[in-house]
Image (cartoon, rainbow, N blue to C red; front, side, top):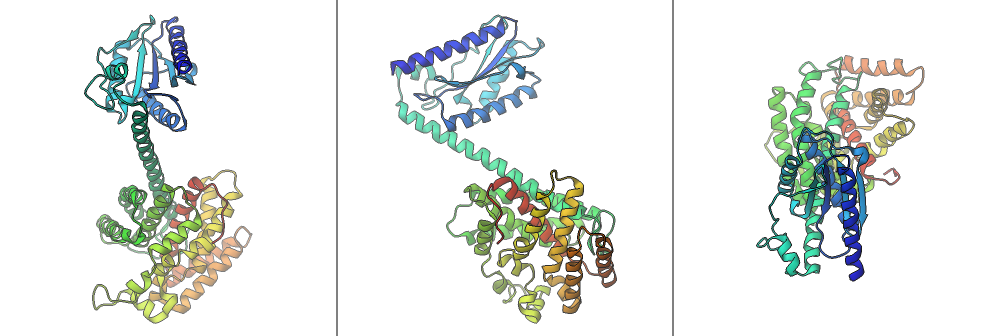
Length: 470
């Protein structure tokens, strides 16, 4: 124990010398350390916490226009724990003012009482606030008093601190994951509608087969839906029930609210109803998987299936709402499995996405060094074709019948086969003209394209494993 104390004191002495070096050229310095009772004062968890707090501190200082000299910053991890020291540029702000600002940082930070942000002025003098921090554990006495009196058991104190830091890091991870997923979902919607040209669908230059919506309608709809993406991800990350189906009522509430907002924003036009359904489930499942560090295409499919086990039978095979049949119910009654639509797709674990679309999209991006707009457009076009060629779109089936759907799927398959060749442009033009003449809009495939791109982005960020075709 004596050796440990000696090493800690020596480490602190070295820190004092580094501060003095900075003051020799009349610079103010800012340092950060963590108050960890007992030893060791640093481990993997403490280092992660320190890195988060340092990032917070740098952002806080910059917000107050305190500019640090990052070229001269010092990082140390020694017997006294993790330590950071940096000079401050300029003389526009005094050491006392910086101390007051860093005190505010400590007060506002959720675990600020574990942090020591110290200021040394240009003459090498430590700047004190004249205030004593309360003890982190009892909050009754100053921390220095409890430390000198050894009021609290070191092992118990360390357990409390470790638990608090663990909770802090988990919340930070949750925030980052849910922010990423929300961004990926919005990117998926925007890239889908921006893909141009598209057969029968709204894009940047055409309304396709639609007279009631255009590119701006989709942008507005995407904007209003985007505010829910992070909420759904947070619900998925926090969800802990043993029975995954317990999440369905809450997910339906999200979906219904999003539909209401969509229709309000678009004056009653259905731009994204299918995408709401698909992305809602995908956001929830992705967040829930990532929370447990086990995201993969296979685990995603398994959980989607578990979540939606009898969706077709429950929603298309039974009368839930009224005596009037919906389009989906009529299709299911008339065409059976071929008419299951998007419900059948998601109940089966999104086979169009995982058996066809993601392998195509992944292969395309794997061949490219960078994902420029041109690369993304080409990849999404190729992926849309394979989706139209394999997706039994119940909306087209209901409006145009089996013959037209089969013809559309065949022409799309032909276009896909010649993608990247000299004959592609003419074959793709044929597909676009077929949709124009027959007033077909493969919106179900567009929704599947958006969710494909979303899942691809999630997997790229959160799964380091090799892709396996489902």
